[in-house]
Length: 141
Image (cartoon, rainbow, N blue to C red; front, side, top):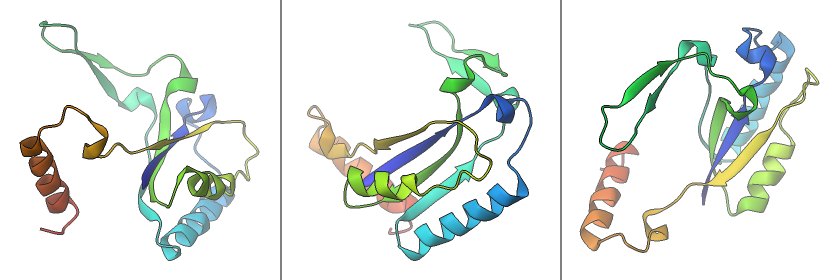
């Protein structure tokens, strides 16, 4: 099963304060552990929302672009990992080991990545297209 681990942004991060050198070093070691265990598929940090944009869709209206920064820091994503693990419990156990050498208070959310088979109304034709696209993006095709 694949799980997305969503690291929420902090007010310090959104204010432009990056992680300490010590935390970056510890995170690199943690990422290396996950790579060696064969569970890390992807992982990246994101820039503050002041450098981002949102696209707002509303009915048939033209989509609207809203430039950052965005309010409600606690709802913003600061980074992510995609893990391939046996189940949610394994993902939780790994993320409980995540370094927090800066001692900051923050949240990390873990959510299973939906598979095509999770959708009841997915036609066989669309399921095949999704399978082909997944194979191409993962380098299997």
